[in-house]
Length: 435
Ligand SMILES: C[S@@+](CC[C@H](N)C(=O)[O-])C[C@H]1O[C@@H](n2cnc3c(N)ncnc32)[C@H](O)[C@@H]1O
Image 1: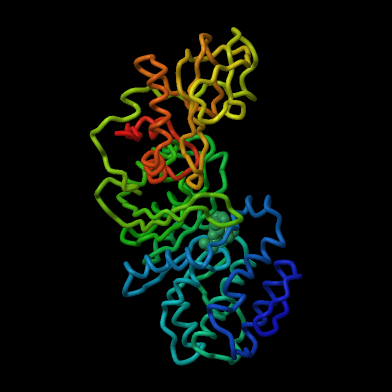
Image 2 (image 1 turned 30 degrees about the horizontal axis):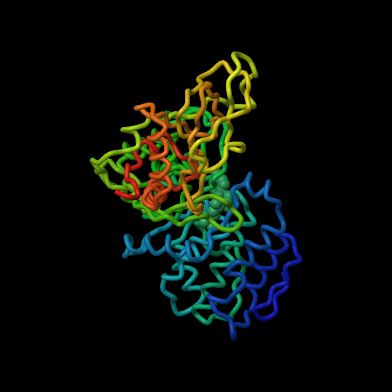
């Protein structure tokens, strides 16, 4: 990296950038006109160089997506609030240190750079598998201390500072996880296919669940975790056993939606403060239990049974619908396509809803009324809602309920991840727009 004032040349690959950043903070520093808010090394530039140096596939495999400053500050702030006396704080998957940097912004500056780094070094700890990221995290923390304290002198070397920020695997560090008084946490979100022995899951699972379970298992009972996590952990039906597992470990977690992680990671996330509690609840979305009528009182909710790439075209001929070819918001679509299928089929009239939608979509539950006399095989990207009274008119009234702002609000609070579940759809309040 070459640095002139606040300009940074981005033509270097990541390891060159790291050593350049390191050199620039251990040597004498020109501080005039520079600040924590505007300093490129403390803001988006290292992440930008990382993205330019490694392709998306590699970044997804390593889980190297780093927290932007607004979210990092929110997560740091909620930990400071419950740790007013400080203590040792760890980010066990620290990356290039964005959460640690946000936390350090509220640590006091001592009389000299060495004293400041010594004091911060006793309070900040972390692991990352990637040695370059660890060095960069340390360099950025040193630079923050310099800018806040106005310290322009040299320091010996980067290895000598922040002894508790180390290269290491948090999954192999159970004793060390028992030491900190609090945690900052944004683990990798990739899918892990072989979870081995795991009481609360089988098959593939989001890595964030494994990392969080490991941390909750080994941390001090009293140590809070301030985390950013993917929404699927909070509302995915496949993670119900995981949530029960956390509750059984005696923890409670607050919930604040953060929306999409950032422009490069299309994952909806939330922030949470996980603290000890005997309450038996986690990530309560704020959706109140209501006694009035629900969609599930009038409709049976199923998932379409056809998985096109898995099911052979065998069995009887049926009409066939899939998410791509079914028009949206049609109140009487009669399928014309057919296929052979040996599994469950549905007799019209019924309503289908696309299973995948995003909180940023105009409507979360996009519906179509299916009519006709022939049984229909339905692709599994669609949910099927069968009216208990068998009436097409009930189906049309359901589409009005689903199109309403109330339903959008309900689903956006209740289920921020992309897949609608049969459970949440059955729970949608039956509120017709005209009362
Ligand atoms: C999503 S990034 C978050 C980094 C940082 N906490 C932040 O919020 O910006 C996850 C980091 O975990 C690291 N990582 C992956 N597996 C790890 C493991 N087993 N132990 C420690 N770090 C790991 C990756 O290298 C990556 O830097």
